[in-house]
Amino acid sequence: MVSQKFGSRLYSLCRIDLNKSIFYESTEAAAAAAQQVAKATKKTRDGWPSTISNCKRLPRPEISFSGPPYQASNSNFHFFSLLPGQGEGCVMATNPHGNAAIYDADTQSVFLLPPPNFRKPSDSIAMSVTRRRRASAPGVNREDDHALYVINRSDGTFDFEFFNYCRTQVWDYPAVDNNWYWCPLTRLPPWLGDVKRVCDSGANVVSRPLAAALAHSTATIYLSSKDGTYAYNVSTGIWSRAGRWVLPCKGAAEYVPELGLWFGVQGDPENCLCAFDLSSCAMADSGPALRHAWDYLDGLPDEWSPIERHLVSLGSGKFCIVTYCIYCPSPSSDEELSVMTEVVTVLTGVEVVHGGDGIRMIKHRSQRYNIENTRIHCVL
Image (spheres, rainbow, N blue to C red):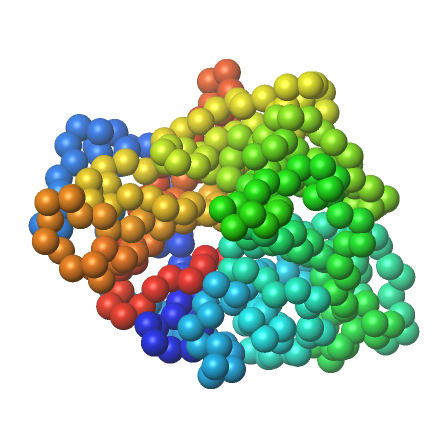
């Protein structure tokens, strides 16, 4: 989890034990607790249901990242991502100035990286693809090359590049043969030339990417905007039109091999975790088949409205769903405008398992983070 104190340019990274905070000891314990919640749910003094616990203090940060002083307020371009394949505790950070670094929590080491070609908004979509297996050079313990594809979701631009990296030991860094580098995509998706809209100022801007999913078997990234979906073949670098359909989720979808389905969170007004099939046999001309949609979060106070959701896959069908809620008092309220901008982050633990004729979702716990003078920047 990355947090930022208001008025500070420091972004602090800490580890949260989700097994203790939002998960029960077992699937059976979670199912039993869900039955008790269905019978009676009390609310606390501030209107939140008693089933959503409150965290008022974060663990001590492992490290803090900082940008230049003159960019302290530019929080929308501080991007953080894990590097799958490099190590469970490896976190990459980029700032608005174009600097990039990796923090390895296991070795408590910081490595500088080549600068990216574009600034990365904090809500960029990131997907990791295993590119190829490389023979280890003499004295270097290295396995696969990986590529972290980062897609800018902001209106008006379409920045899409990948970061190539390979698993190395600390003493091998920086990797030999220049295998750690950023590479922008020279071939842009066709909709940049075909589908544009005109904003109030009269300028042509690009349709905003809304969702993405990776089909590992074909090494294809499916990218949806409001105008339809295009497919990018990682091996050939070629775009193709997938159809006028759009993915049934927002942001990045996650594939769970044990269940053979892709999972994502749906947008407003639902608080739903959805499961869909992105395999070619299930898509045909109408897009991926939506198999399930479950309400993962209920009982929010009327004054709190979800504004953004993010799915974190924990493996084996377990997920942490991050929901950002904003305080919206009733029109008759005399609350100050500054209070209306208060944001609370809610983490929800869910588990999807085989059951009956298909699969079912089991809710575990939810915990909200409402920490004084601190906002949750992102959860990795």
